[in-house]
Amino acid sequence: MIYLGEILFYLAGFLILNSFFLYPVVIYFKSRKHSGPKTESGFEPKVSILIAAYNEEKVIEERIKNISELNYDLNKIEVFIGSDLSTDRTNEILIEQGKKYNWLNIYLSEERKGKAGILNELFRKVNNEILVFTDANTKFHRNALRNLIEDFSDKMIGGVCGKLVLVDNESSKSEGVEEVEYWKYETFIKKLEGRCGILLAANGGIFAIRKELYHPVPVVKAVTDDLFISLSVISGGFKFSYRNDALAYEDTGKDLSAEYGRKVRFGATNFQTLIYFKNLLWDKNKFLSYAFWSHKVTRWFLPLLLFILFIISYMIMNQNLFAQKVFYLQFILYLLALCGYLLSLIKVRIPVFSLPYFFVVSNLAIAEGFIKFLKKQHSVIWTSTER
Picture (cartoon, rainbow, N blue to C red):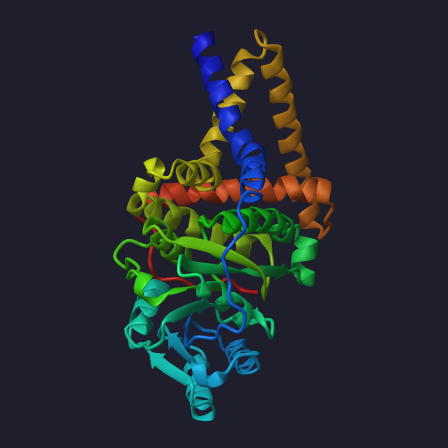
């Protein structure tokens, strides 16, 4: 029994260590052997920008203005914004803005379709060769679109992801929402993957693909739309790159409860997405499979791995000195997380406590998402995270 326990202990520990530490090192050295896409300066094809919106009255007008100020020939841009039966002033604002800009096309759904359903509807209306996906609450830097599109001058590039910068608001700073710090780590990984041409999950706020590589996003069983679209490109044999100079900005959620709900939803839809791309687990490109296992699959099963590591290390700690040390390290981590929770109640944020707290809450959300996935309780209908 001890022998089996030790095998599970070392296996769980290795998978966690690989995902967070070994894989970043491997992808770093792998990326140094790649020169990136062969770009052509001044490349400016026609593009179609797609935005799915639901109750975005606070930001939609500003978003449209933001697009109008881009450093890109507006005669080569068409924008499609689909409102998913919004119940606030979103539709009214869209109609007003549609009269103001001739490149703005409005689709007002008469039923809730979910983000995937709206994107599929918008796709049927586009005319241009490059599709740009973004969100209503995202703001592009003036040169974001030009820099994002440049990589498509390389014919092997099927998709390009821009750099999404998350901005803390005053509420999230005091609530212990450490999304910004975690996102910096994720951005580092995405940058390295993009250099290798295997970026696995584009930032939903700013990415683009070739029109012919778009596969309708499933609407019967909810998937993570940006992940589904990204993996569709990768699994088709095309490269997915990353542009560090294609900047976009979004606010973080106002508090951890708002982020928690979003992570639960993504937790459920990520597992559903995995079913559609299970072939990537054993792809002919072995490094792509290694990246998929390390950066995605292990992260999705991290709550289970952490649970196994904690229980097994406790069970064998008297016979294995290393397991004993690992158990105490975990105990300290969870104790710090508890302190982070208590401090968040009085609006105090200290990184040594708030980071473990955010880590634990994020994994609890993934676990709840997995349960929803098993119970088939995840839905294609979504509500935007309040920011």
